[in-house]
Image (cartoon, rainbow, N blue to C red; front, side, top):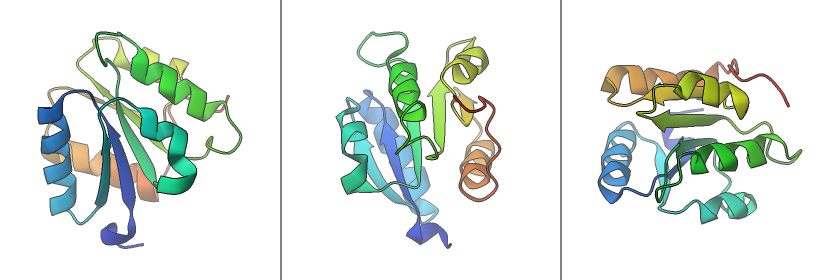
Length: 132
């Protein structure tokens, strides 16, 4: 499937990060839906994303993104959706495993590495978090 047919839901409470990630992904041909609070994660049946990119820390809550991820990964209807956590937290890898995320991206990130992880999780999925 060409990039322009893939839809990515980006969840982050920082408008500058949302804008940056949207710019990068749109330039690569992806369709982007953004959310500043994660409420769109409850409307996945309407949005129909191919991948979710979720910030770990939102609105001061250290693991708000992990809670969203865990909810998605433990529900039969959304379990197969690829979820990538993004964070500057030093223990992002263990948190990603805990909530069954498919992958994680550490901030700051290299754009080429970032895009490589997006492509890998869209086309060649191998979850790091296992299956709930």
